[in-house]
Every structure is written in C-alpha cells, then in structure tokens.
Amino acid sequence: YKSMHRESVQNPKKFWGNMAKQELAWFQEPKKVLEWKVPFAKWFGGGRLNLSHNCLDRHLDGPRRHKAAIVFEGEPGDVRVLTYQQLHDEVCRFAHALKGEGVKKGDRVMIYLPMVPEAAIAMLACARIGAVHSVVFGGFSAEALKDRIHDCGAKLVITADGGYRRGQVVNLKKNVDAAVAASPDVRRVIVLKRTGTVEKLNEIDRWWHEITDHQSPDFPPEKLESEDPLFILYTSGSTGKPKGILHTTAGYLLGAHLTTKWVFDLKETDLFWCTADVGWVTGHSYTVYGALSNGATTLMYEGAPNQPEPDRFWRIIAKHRVSIFYTAPTAIRAFIRWGDQWVEKHDLSSLRLLGSVGEPINPEAWLWYHRVVGGGRCPIVDTWWQTETGSHLLTTLPGIHVMKPGLAGVPFFGADLAVVDEKGKPVKDGVQGKLVIRKPWPSMLRGVYGDPDRYQKQYWSEVPGAYFTGDGAKRDKDGYFRVIGRIDDVLNVSGHRLGTAEVESALVTHPAVAEAAVVGRPDDLKGQAVVAFVTLKTGQKAGNDLMAALREQVSKEIGPIAKPDQIRFAEALPKTRSGKIMRRLLKEIAAGGAVKGDVTTLEDLNVIASLQSSSSEEG
Ligand code: WTA
Image 1 (tube, rainbow, N blue to C red):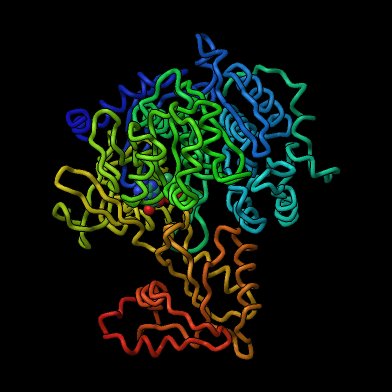
Image 2: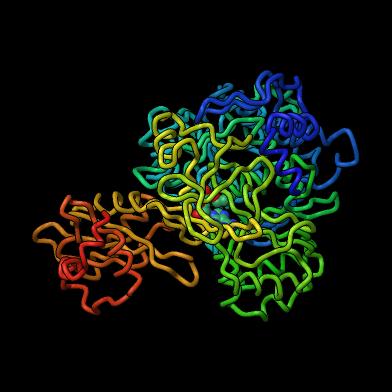
C-alpha cells in the first residue's frame, strides 16, 4: 500500500494511465492522462468509451453473461433477478425508447424513481446514448424536484406511479405532476407502473412499458469522450440552493470501479448489497456503476429496514446470502436501539465484509456492528468520501490495514489528503484542522452545473491551491484520519446532507416568519438533529399550530427529511455588531436543550447573547 500510494501521488499520470488501460474497456485509448489548470481537470483526453458498455457489454462474452447483475427485492416481498444479458437488453430497449422521445447526447434527463431495477436501467440507458442523468431522491418534494428540473434544463422526467415505503405507497407521480406543471420546458414524462395507483395518464405522460417493451434489445453504445458529462447530482452546500455536482465519464467510472474492486475486495461470487438509494451518490457509485462495472451481483431493496419488522435487512441477507453489506451509521444506531435479538434470529454466516458510509461512525456503533452483525469475523471498511469526490478517498483496505474503530482510515490511491490550519499549513498529527485535497483525482467533480464561479469559490478559495472538503479532521501517528464532521454550514442528518441556508430559506417562505436561523444539535440516532430559531412578523402568534405549519412548510419546500426536529420562537436572533447571526451561540443553546414548555412566549436570546463575552463575536 505504502509504495503504491506514494507512486500514485508522486506520479499520478503513470499510475492512472496504467489503471485506466488495465481496468476499463475503451473504444479508443486515451492519449493524455491529465490536463490540470487549478481547479479544472481533464482526465484521459482523446479516449473514447461508454459507461454502459463497461457495465454491460464487456461482461457478455464470457461466463458472466448469465450471471445475476441485479437481485431486487421490493418492500412487499416481490423478487426479480436480472442477468447481465437481460439487463443489457432492457437498457438497450429503454435507450431506444429515450431516442424515440427525442433525447439526444448531452440532454439532461431527470430520474425520480423508487429503488427498483428500472432506476439502474434508466441511468444506464442515459449513459448509453450520452444523455446526462440527474437522479432525485424520492423523498424530495415536488418543489425541490421542480428547482432541479429548472436548474439543469431537463426536458424529460422518468418516474413511477409510486413506490413502497413502510407499507405505504409513496405517490411519486403526484409530485412529478406538480413539478411539471410549473416547468414549461418539460416535454415528456415516462411513467413506470409499480404500484398500480395511477389509472389515467396526462397528455404529456407515456407508460414505460408501452414505449419500451417492443423495442430492439440491441442499441450500439455511443462512443463518448472521456470528459463527456455523465450525471448531475444535487447536493447541499453552505449557501443557497443545492448545487448540481457534475461528473464526467471516464474519470468517474475509474474511481467507482477501482474502489469497488479494492475496498470491497470483490470476488466473482460475491453478492454485494449497498443499502443507499440511487438518489444519493453512494447509490450511483456503488449500488449501480461500481458493482456492475466489475461484473458483480448487486442487490437492490426498495423499502424501509423495519418493514414489516425490524429484522428486514437481516432477513434479506440470510435469504439471498449477501456477502458484502454496506450501510450508514445512522442505520446501525437504529439497529442497536431495536435490539440484538432481531439480528441474532437470522443466519448471517454468508457475510464476509461490512462497510460504513455517510457520517462518522462512533466506536460503540462500530464495535456492535463488528460483533453482532459481522459475528466478530468480518472486516469493516469505514469509507469517507463525498458527492463531489465521486468515490472513496479515505478507507482501510481489507487484509492490508489494521482497522481502528471511529477512524475512517488512510488515503486511497491518488488521494493527496492533508489536515491544515487557518492559513492552509499542515498541522501536526493529532491536531484538528481542515481536511483538504491537494491534487486532482480522476473521479473529482468537474464543477457546479452552470456555475463555474461557484465551483471555484465554494471549493478552491478557502485554502489556497487545495480543495476544501468542508470537513474537520485529525490524523494520528500512523497516518489514519479521523473525520470529525462538517465545519461549514452543512448538516449531516441521518447521513443526509442538508444546508442550513436551505432550511432557513424554506422557513422564511412562510408568511408568519421574519427571520430564521438553523443549526445542528448532536443526536444519538440521527447524528445531527435540525433546530430552527425563528422570529415572527409583527402580529403573528407563536404556538403549536404555527410550529406544525412551519415543519410542513419545510417538508413542502425540500422534503420530509429536512423537517426541523425542534422549532424555537425568539424575540430576536442574537447578532454581532456587524449584524451577523451568532451561530456558534445558537449551536450551544440548541445543544443545551433547555426549552421552555410554553411555546407561546418568545425566548429572549439577546439576553443570553449579552451574557456572553465578546469572544463569541464570530458571526
Ligand atoms: C460525511 C456521502 C465521516 C462527511 C458519501 C462528508 C463521512 C459528507 C463519511 C459527504 C465517513 C461521509 N466518516 N464522515 N466515513 N462518509 N461523511 O456528499 O461530512 O452525501 O463531507 O456523500 O458526509 O456527504 P455526501
């Protein structure tokens, strides 16, 4: 590891040039490995390839042809298995259908589907024709979907009548109808029949099966350039609305492919289950692209972990003989709370490797995961990365590195990570600082869609010459990184990224609200809980009804995942003399937890603020 990592960082062109040739299938091999003009990278110039060809066609000539590519289990218990050949055929049929609807190379296509195989099929079909997909998690609201449609200028939306979640039907189509009604540029909505809850389509809609089933199962993959855009995925930042993170073809694929292969120590016979929804980057890179590019079998599960009972995940692992299981600490903490008996009821002897992702894992949760789920025999990889990084950048490699509970691990190949101080200088081991990346890596974001300035400002101006991750970290004497969490105004709620500014602007769209400030509060289950401090317009009355209305407002603007856990009404928000909200103070108040039982009287935060010394004047 050490010598390979050193070489990969010192001579990235050689390392990645070799990896690209060795690991990916090219129509034309690249001529130039890297062009780097801070902060803009071009990887594998002159190369031509197609991601769906790498994930499908290249497996069809050998023994993988009739191997399961996707094992799907729906929440009601329905199971479907698609072999590589079958998946290839479905992707080709759907690619024809998309072409038939006028989708061309470079067009943006919105995907708003449940966790069903068609989500992967839609992504791969876009990749096959060179269209740029943007998957939106089904838990986001109509309003959030509309914003994303407008931002990327999508003309086509792929959805389903509904999906199953906690025994209920999530009415995706209703949200799409509302979003599309406010999006004059959308010309077509393709609707998958999943729940049978939509009887009649609108004029703009077509059933998935009606435009797909009769199509040819052959569709030659478009010979795309390495830097052709592959997808846009929206994620929360510290300012404004979510940003469209742009990833391109070759570099992204190489990162997703190689990390899946090495971090999960993938074997031909594995059944790999990454529990992330395809609406998040983890679902993109590991459930779909990384697994399929390696010719692995990937498991997709549609629903909730506690439906019908808290042992659904363990039931699935035992039934399908899952060997690699990759989930989030927030889920692990919920399992702990539900009790060991739900896990112990099932034969989990098929498991050989466990993974954690999305937020720091506390050592207690790590040890429980290792002992109870992993039976004390499975290594755990704690993978740190971001929507922006495209693939893992910190992890241990099973069989190579010692695991340390609570520490993500060491830099993956090609990753030049450092912990730096306010001035951008590396700090001593053991000292906390900002986590930065000092060199380009193949699966890095190529920018913020439609906003090159924001890319530069947001990521490349905090620390000169380096990419700032937004995370705080510490490195130990063995070179292991402990990621502390976000030090910018981004929250991590149940492993989901949420911008405080986003929630604040959702709150102020309510007519009763004058000002809002949102902060995170440590939470045993969710990692962080959302606390909103709100001031009201004159004549408005605080109370339980308004509190419920405000939570509803956030759910409508963003989605149920963003609903504040607590809303505190205040006379005024504590501000510095220059008028900046004193967030650190609000965080302390939120963490203190003392809330008056009576929500109809307003808290006077200025009194608390005035008690603080001037040292808290940080804005
Ligand atoms: C956090 C999810 C600690 C981190 C893949 C990062 C983690 C943000 C870990 C990105 C981990 C992710 N240990 N923190 N193993 N993995 N994070 O874009 O704060 O949804 O910046 O990508 O999640 O969230 P995103």
